[in-house]
Length: 285
Image (cartoon, rainbow, N blue to C red; front, side):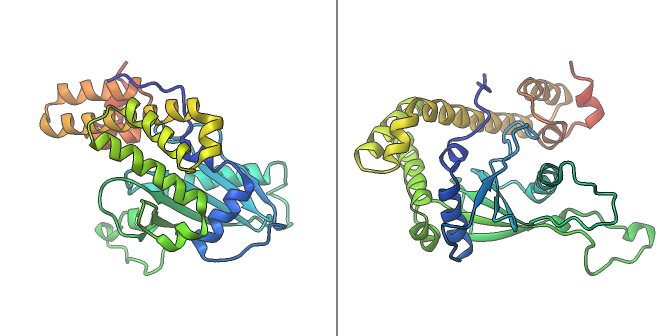
């Protein structure tokens, strides 16, 4: 399956690329109130760390908090580890030329991490991913297991599908309308329309019913291209997963790995799909 990888961003990150909307979103997620005078500065990473997603949203609130948000249609159990990589890069941007080897303490904003889930598989309204759950054990070597990890990162997973977390949706109109738009696309796909036609029809419906109206009027073409790419990408991954499950032969795994490498997935992601070793994957031309 061919994938158009021109659009590395997503409709979600395009929609929420606005300080005022991000302030409203954060207040809804955390159940707090912030004055419009509190500055919000977007510092989203622009370099691709994982092919299927760049860092969706990263922003500072008043220089005191740095918030990282990922939008996903499937729950990735490695998100805490990915956020660890992301936040290290974000802190690099924040610190920049400050002298980290000097005796003066450098103060950095406190981090918070969210995954906003809108996939079709059932998922609780809220759950948590912990980095420590990925840590290996040293019991094999006779070493004691420490009760508390010296390194932890906690990710709050919020289900934003239409009808879920209605309290959050009421506090952030943009998020509620985004969920309604995606739900309408899925409704048309379920009715038998191909992705392109379903997205086009959903755009028209939402514009006529004052759902993300201005955003869709200004970005209709880009939204179409982004969503088609996202849907094709998700379909391709499902095909690769099915192929890997149905045929465990190494030659088939190599064939799937080649497709994934051509689509510029990371070595780690290809390992997870195919079960091949990283050395084997690296030597695939």
